[in-house]
Amino acid sequence: MENILSHNATSNHLISDMPQQPQSVKQTIVEMVKAMQADFGRTFQNQFHDPEVLAEFKNRLLTKLRGYPPGAIISGYEQCVDRNPKFCPTVPEIEASTKEIIKNLEQAEKNRIETQRLAALPAPTISCNPVEMFAKAKESHDSEKLTSEQRMKKRDEAMKNHNALLIIHSHLIKRVYADYDHLCKFPGCRKAGSISRGTKGGDNFYCLQHFRLV
Ligand SMILES: [Zn+2]
Image (cartoon, rainbow, N blue to C red; front, side, top):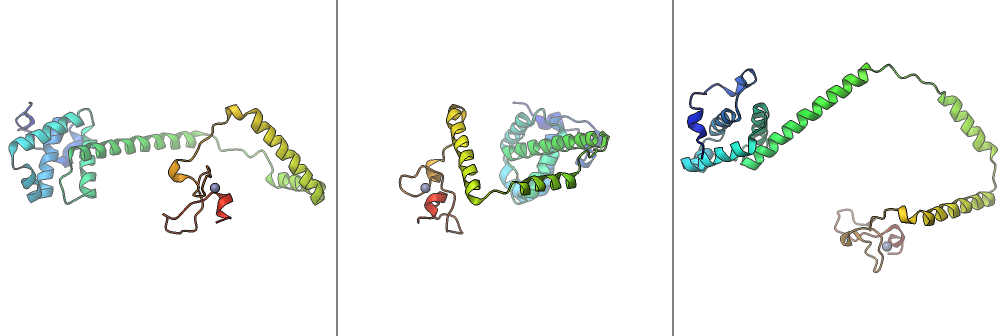
């Protein structure tokens, strides 16, 4: 087992100095544990009074955090402390937090690049006249004066075409069925239950069809 304490016995610069000095993950962990000792005082003493436990904690941190940038590790630790200031963060908590910090940084960088890219593009030119388009659409709609009977007939035809297409392409249609727990509560119905009279959850959910019946 490596002893990370002795390896870094000489390193005692402050965490706030970090960005200036590139440092190893080992150094970072030593500093983080020092910070933890200061931040959690008695809680830290109770948890790590056994030097073997502390050494094991550090070694585990080293194993899990190797390869992460020291800055992200420290920010990850600080985030853990902000979220739960009463207890020393665990190794998985620190690792998850570090990963989250890195992900956020990557996203921020992506957003920055995207913003630059968009700023570099020429301003969009508007080549259509929305007012004119609207007038035309309105005109064509108004000119099509159908009686309600004709309209129904037209709709029926469209529905027929639609259903025929559904049959032709049925082998291509991906059907997603609701889980058993999410089914309509009407006996025998296989649809998803999506509507309920309850406003606090936990009530029976029905499909649109059966909701009208119950
Ligand atoms: Zn139903």
